[in-house]
Length: 318
Image (cartoon, rainbow, N blue to C red):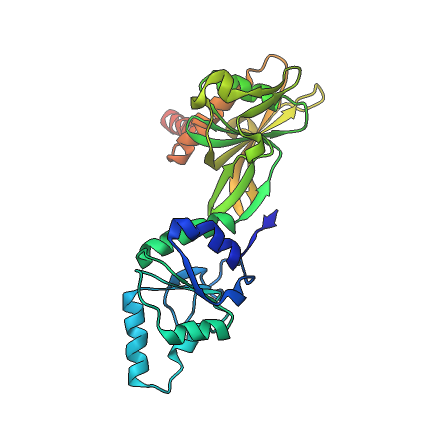
């Protein structure tokens, strides 16, 4: 698992064209780092409108914010209201709406080693685009060995030990109309407190390795419709060899199946274990597991329904 860091210089270079950024002052603050921080009210937000009480790492000032600072300064010329902008570890300030930048903000940017940008975009658009970019760039991420696919419209990760047949299963699912996202090393990113997004590393995009056949280009073989760029992770299917020594399922496992919760990047994801044995049609079982999961997400549980029917029948007979 890794937590990315991003310097102000890297932020500027990545978003300069998208946000029409101009670097006006504070070049000496180029190496200051932005990084993911735990979800807590004690940590400042990465980006937002002017906030002097709990300042953001990146403060965005539009016409109204600049007018507010100007009026505050006029009422009390000896106050350090502008200097408050640069305190509390502020990393950068962006003047939005193509507003003229006050001279004192330019001077303070140099003194405090804080980048001062200008942009022609309105402040709300700046904040939305920066939040989206930073949430993906600085998010917690982890690489998990397996095949990540879109099955029946949801993000499904197929895991299991090496050579158990993950890629063969993925190939059969693709032939049945499902879509490949990433083989072998999908990367998962926590983009909000309860959402994990899976993506494919650039090097592996479109490719699937199948033993005996080698590397296959799924896009070239089956068409672009069989490839998906990214998807939220909703379900994990774990393949496990079933030997003759394994005990048969009993008790509640026969009713509710072999399901548990697996924690990834702090988010609980449902994981279903499927035994692999000769004669079992895993593609059909996987699609059925996904359909059943979707039903449960919508509030229906077959096991509970059956138990309720049995209870009703016993009550009626008695």
